[in-house]
Image (cartoon, rainbow, N blue to C red):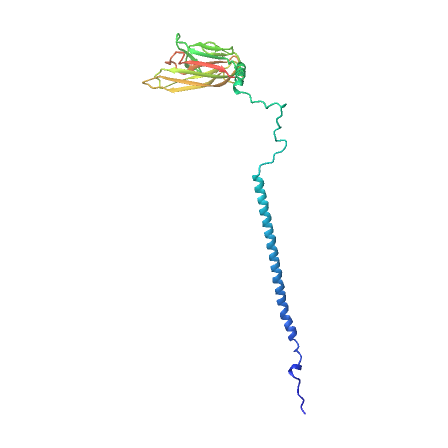
Length: 262
């Protein structure tokens, strides 16, 4: 007699089917946990960001508020209360009341600031005539001078030249009014040293002046001046490098002078 085989219900699960189902559920679980964790971290980060932003806004508002508020008054900065025994603050002095005092001081200090500077100005002498003088082996024209203004004893007029009596720095100036038809006229201001060291030249040209002359209207002035150091015994003279020269001998047109600076 043939026996019947086991029924499908009696047959147990096939080996490997349950383990295969479990392998499919673990990845899903891990992905779910990762998604939940990422969402939680994102939410936590967003919360911290919002909290920091709110704190920054609060600090900014506090700074603006403190800037707009006036500074607090300290007890030292408040004026003392006025009492009957206290004296009122003195009034500022009237500017008009100070004027006489200022004027007295300015008048009093005036003479102290005044310094007398020795000077000598020589004017052309119209009562005399020009003369010839040899200089550097060439004929020159000399001008007759007369003393016009003198102050102090540092400078003297001597032999149509300026004689230095006190050493110092001087401003020397000169002017000649030419009326000559020669195409060019001019003059030189020379210094004659009293003390010569070694092979130094005794005569030194300090200044030189030259002007073009108009043949139709020959009237022109030539002025020169500058600062030089002069020693005791030196002399300063003016010469025209021409054998003859037609010039004006008026004192307001032709002159030679110097004054000491230091």
